[in-house]
Image 1 (cartoon, one colour):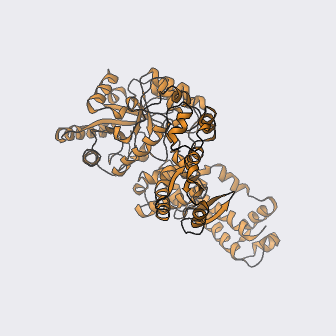
Image 2 (cartoon, helix red, strand yellow):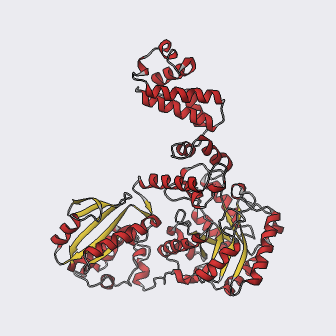
Image 3 (tube, one colour):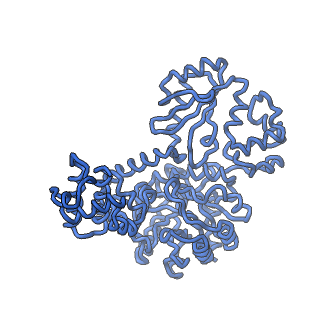
Length: 557
């Protein structure tokens, strides 16, 4: 075994000891030994115990550990301390800019156990409140995590938008009169993007092909099976299909939908549109209504397209208000008044639903009963002076381990609406998660089920649950299901929207905003809602102020 792997394991042991607050002298001894081993000009694996203990900075104790490492590849002490530490916390130790003490704060005081949860906390501005952190440290941590996420080759849709716009601008500058459009996952508005695909139509394919190949539009441009492949500066793979103008529409259709969808449309007669002048013509030949790119996943909407019964997909402009948001009362950045004025004056909305964290969320300055009453008094005063706008008194109440909410009924009934969400004890069986959620849904004060699976895209899968049972319970108890619009969540997953709508559920596009800019995430909520086939009539916050007031009153009755 070489010196570096030995030094690395000794260093990890010292860091984990510091994390668990082991004897400081022992921590320093092992850390120094790791440093010395790394710098030695000869392999320590070739030395005997007697020779090792005489080396400066090693001694008997560390010599024993090195011998154990060389003979077994690990150390019992290291394995024991690893077993007592969540894998995500160990992964955090490798993030540049945070040492063991900061990781200890993140884990023990903030309840964060994965890199994904840490990234989410950075986006919520939660780290700047913790001891030893500040805005600069928080930004540096976020950038390191984003770089790490990009190294997997997978990106959130929100991370790709700006990059895609820049690429399209460059292509249009190169071919001012050319035909070009995104295809694939990005055009279908998928929540995770593995690659960008672009279709370019040209009268001279060879000239267009070579022009792109010799350009600096992308990094590492090369040819592959007759098309172009490159990558953006942040490592996103890009595939460019250059075709004759007469084949442009057909190619765009084929490269946009997933395989199952394309095959289904072509099998119904779409293949007969040999050189169509529009994608609408392809669907017309297949005796179907035109399907928006975001619906071209599998065969979910095929029969409805045949019957001309496709939903009129919701748009951003259909939204009349925003629910589930956090102010400075808990872990937000802006005051209630600042958020209200921003929604009224900048976003031209009719209402704002405040849902600061409840008392169990100690890591997010959750509201005690006394502070709930104080906030509600502030909102009452604010509503008296706001003109043409209303702030609803809500709360994001934690669903406790037994499924109960963390306020007594006499407090819950004081809110206009309650968002019930799980934030802790996420390691559950499917049966336990389902039971826990259903009990919360059956609470008569639960208005909205918040981010139902607790997932964080690209970093935390969320707990398994029986979707049908949970959605059925929401339908039976008149509970709205949230589409959490934060680009890291987008939860409820769009693949379950149709089941929920078929059961009669309403959905609500909630930004979970922790600052004014967070309201803009409703854009991503609308995108994923469109993928799921949501229409404004079944979206809670597409209701007018008067309509949603009646919904809240009816629920409380």
